[in-house]
Image (cartoon, rainbow, N blue to C red; front, side):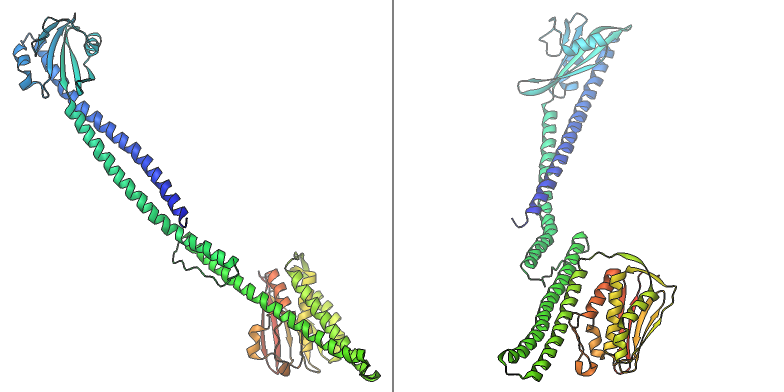
Length: 453
């Protein structure tokens, strides 16, 4: 079911609402019933009190009792006066005079000296009986009793109960409908997110969910879309990476094959064979360097940083010593202009990889008799040279894997993965890297430390 969550929410909220309404309705009906019965009790207790007072004052109530249907009984009731032995002294109906009778209400009034009320059913009609003591000198000598049909009160209570229950059912139905609609509105984005996740699972990485909401679901959809965009970038990068790797490996392998074939077939003489073998050796070195760079790139995603305090100037000294022979071939001067007091927290082997790549690139693309200088502050370090520079249109992509500037303008070639590795190491440390360059004037690479040190 597409909106299973919506219906579950509707059922849950509906049941909670119905339970709450049932409790409220029951309380309302009970309170209304008690109020109606108490009003009726109050009327007949007042009437009984009046008759009791008349008896105590020796006022004959015969006439009143005989006319009770007109004056004292709103519902064709009956008025009795009983003495302390239970004998009926007066009866408004004229049928029970002289008869002895006792009932629960009579006994309560006689024994407790307080009014009492009781409710019965007579001939499928509700009836109430009220008793009131006649006390003379603190002793109950007689009891006034009134019995009356109160079916009209019960009917009124039933009508009220039906109205309340009907209204509650209507409201409950409306609440369930609204709950279903709200549940659908709530679950619709989730359904779309689920469907979009399924599309991504199938490989459609450009899937985006349109959810125009400012609540938690809207933020979830926004996070999903950002994740989708990142996955698309990763997938695009993966495909490009595989394509680039295939191309980079294919080229030296094809060259090696082309150079080996004439040697195997004997078509090349001794001098040519020696020249071909030298070219093969060069291609193997190139292939080995590429594989090494690929392994380094893959290892970065798994290795755990081992941060330690590094004196920046000492790490630059080490890098200068390693690359001095390569710089000497082009008569490039390597300068370490770092403050000896600057200390950073970094992984030594990875940070040296960054320095070696940056200085190696600077030498590779440097000019004869040029310089490469490393400057350090507490916020950043810079690798500056006066080499051939990088064309402006190439700057945005220099940190991408296998990206290389136009060799005809740079005067050198490489695998295009060194700066990609540099950037990944910098990102793993939480640092930042940027580059500025002008063709023919040199380049400047800046690594900024975060947070400030």
